[in-house]
Length: 273
Image (cartoon, rainbow, N blue to C red; front, side, top):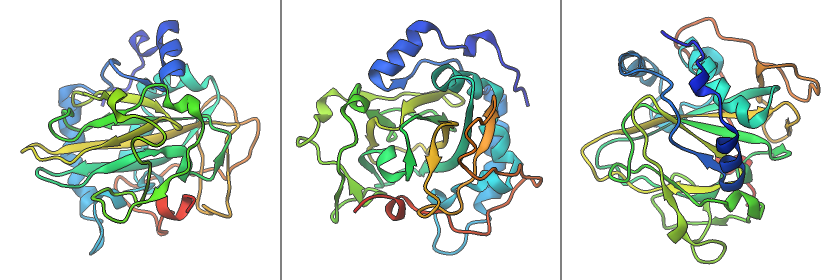
């Protein structure tokens, strides 16, 4: 599978400036060709067979630790080139998670900030959202509030009556206005970038199309995880050197498909109540 970095994946100064001012980037060159995505999608069912009774696709979290299929995606040089344009020369990845909305799914993701859930400091992380399908407003594509990452971390509230996969979320109108949200649209094989403090969410998928994406979390080596909250945390150095050595180092997997022998800390377990 092609993973060669091209100059087209080097962010321009204008793109970097836009990201730092708005908290996201769209319109990036594709990471994978149509044929490569066909192959990746053909392998995805092998992961699904590893789910246990009562689990859903959102439980495919941190399986990169035991799957070369996922680790190779997370370490794709084209993705690393994009992320390096934001985080600089020294960074690692530490999390991956599938978000799959099947056709006619009522599941939503409420407005939230990723960093509210993460026991990590300082805020210096980028999320890559890699589209496994064409994604738009029709099948529940993500929306994001531009510039919301500049307002600091907002306290999230418990939401009991919701179809959101998150039980802690933000209420529109009190801390921000959803009217300014930007709709993310991605073709299969493309990705977006967003800041860990940016407010974002997504609606249900009433369409006949699946909406699948893989999120990958990257952080500068200056970011330290609180092992008391997430004791299974592992950092996989992507580029440069780890001059801080704050976090346990992950070992690259050797099997194509596998799942960790521990249950990753959920957002609700890591988040503040």
